[in-house]
Image: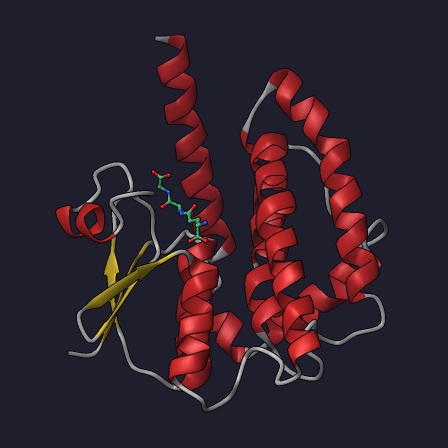
Length: 221
Ligand SMILES: N[C@@H](CCC(=O)N[C@@H](CS)C(=O)NCC(=O)O)C(=O)O
């Protein structure tokens, strides 16, 4: 029955699943979702969160990108993405949780919200990114000499933040402030699997400009 992803091109979360499957060399079908008009299938397969990505393997659905990445790594053994050592695996999971629990909500507050929420979140985002900066310092990738689980998870940091900060005109990441994140980002975005999957900067920028315009129109009406 094969492998199918319900996702959307602009989602850093569905991108994680695509990257992992491509690293493993697994063929899949990608179903593009419109998150403003979710399909019945998406709501059926992810009735709790109603979010992408959903992975269907042999007819069985699963949700939450971090859970899906672990499933992929356990199911298809070639080109492992998680470290083989149990302690290193625990560390990678810790940092992935840090990205999702700390970095992601602060990016949303700092760069996708306005007013007091954004003002408050910007220095907090700076603080959590400094922690990530120390973690990547001196390493080529989080996964060592090649892209691993944590690189896939954190890949949203370079392209998502860089695009959003440009759209809203606020500066969060610069090469001067985050030299290690910036050189990791250059290495990462230079890899072919990333080049194939990271949304084109201008297309993503237009997507967010349209989204913010829609949000502003709703609040002024
Ligand atoms: N924790 C989830 C987050 C997924 C997520 O936030 N997906 C967004 C797209 S980037 C979504 O489907 N949003 C739809 C909505 O919130 O209604 C994961 O890791 O899979």
